[in-house]
Length: 466
Image (cartoon, rainbow, N blue to C red):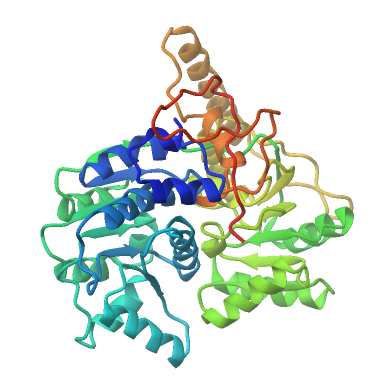
């Protein structure tokens, strides 16, 4: 579906035209119509599927055409991290370019000047507030923030907010909101605590679920079976052998990130650490240095696995195996973006093999496990039980795919390969910087007489977020 087939105002379509947005992603196609109708909604979709545009476009359309107060906060968007809040704010600016809509990003780690700017925006009633829970609570506690006329309340990456311990903060913020509002929740997963939160704050919501995307086909995925003490040497050897200058190394704990940054810096590598303990100016400085290649290796927690958009990452290294298989997809999705090639290397101890097997089950693919790089020792012997379990996962996945193929039931839209293509062809939240690659001319919008696309294979035009 093309955006001009949706009942969006001309000023919204003009902004989409200016940003070279043409076709809806599956999550956008399924969520924009019910949101324009005013329904509450819960969407299950990963980063990279275009979900930010899926909720921003209908809200901006309503703010433009509806009779909403100019001296009040009309929309609250909750974000788990500062980076995602900044990214959402940038997209609000782009999508609202041709309409008089104001927005303020509210997040911690800033100086007193920034805090004062946030305070003024909240008191004067910016149309859209994009906030992290803790920072918004800080402003609410001053007693000078009025949320009684909010019409739209949006939770982005709700599962991550609950994982970070923001459940009580969210419920406290909700207590200041009017009961008559439209509530929208997006989450990459749907565990019981997310379902319970949805039951508490949403009213008869429409549910939209997009299948978990798989890593892009252009990512070469390998896993090195090793002992824990071998990992530092393997990382150093991989980086030296390939002369890479755009690498992200993921570790699950902040202490490990700091330790690795010190270790590799002493070995002469241009590295920096990125984790939640850094202040916002420190984070901005690290990302600036990395984007400008003054830093070649970024060692990070999962704070970078969502909401950071850098298109030319050559390799992602998982220093440890993520416990949640979907975190693996988020991590390796930082490479092979905008139709580029990429590599994903995962270091796996014998204790981490079950976690790797869960990842292989999710992505329906057995990850190649080569010998260790020269000079790094020999990989540990894997018990037959683990080997048989791995083969069983692969066999079951092949059986499911074969049965599905022969069942005569068409493959649901937006699953498996469709999702992998989407994750590769669209940058985070539906943006891109690659031109149309199939030789077709860009479709011109027809507002009065709508025409259907001649080919479903038309490549979506996109713009970079940077």
